[in-house]
Amino acid sequence: MKLYGSIASPYVARVAMFADLKGMQLDMEPAPGGMGSPEYKSINPTGKIPALVTDRGECIAESTVICEYLEALQPQPPMIPADPVLQAQSRMIARMTDLYIAPHNTPLNRMGPDRDQVLIDKQAALFAQGFHYIEAFMGPGPFAAGDTPSLGDCALAPFIVMLKQNIFASFPEVEDPTEGTGRIADWWDALNEHAGCRKNVEEYAVELEKFLKWLREMMAKRQ
Ligand SMILES: N[C@@H](CCC(=O)N[C@@H](CS)C(=O)NCC(=O)O)C(=O)O
Image (cartoon, rainbow, N blue to C red; front, side, top):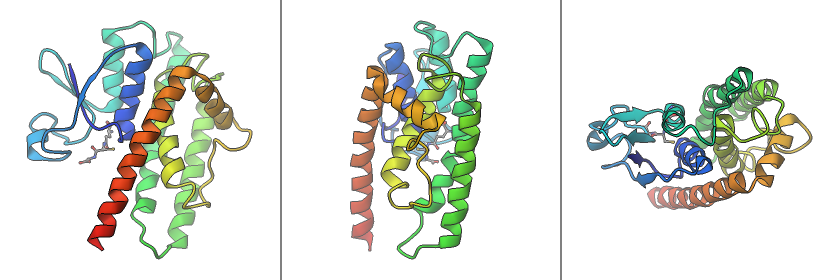
């Protein structure tokens, strides 16, 4: 079994954290030829990372589906709750991260030195709406669903790390939901008090910082 991707991707980090918390070792390699390349598209036609190639050679794409495959392969310890409501809550947090948080990042990342205040305010409102949905649909906790980490935690945590490094500091209009006293702030505290989650969050933060530094240097050279 091989996972294609780089840990700097929040989607790859989702799978890496999920597998690590299950105690599964994943053999990870960069996408051959790079993301979106014809060589990699011959393995994963979407060209996106992550992709997992099974021992029988089938390709499984999409981070959440890969997590669900790993859960089916090795059910213990469960990372998708057995309780139907907690299960739905865990899945909702992963899905809402993808639908209502992840897309709002890109327009801000692409913004040059001239700040477009109208766009910033629009994106800040979209982030606030997305976090409101997530807060409303989290389970009893203290983790995203129940009292142990699950899929929803592995999906949301890397995006929070990414926004902390890339967005919240540069765009104060976008509110960091882990500050303050709301459900997401309590969730973030619980996550960081859990040794396994904290290790994954810290490892991702280090890899992402390295990637962002490389990206900034590359963009500076281009100017
Ligand atoms: N829905 C996908 C999203 C994966 C994704 O967008 N990955 C990015 C890297 S963070 C990528 O591969 N981008 C390259 C491309 O779109 O060609 C998942 O959950 O796996």
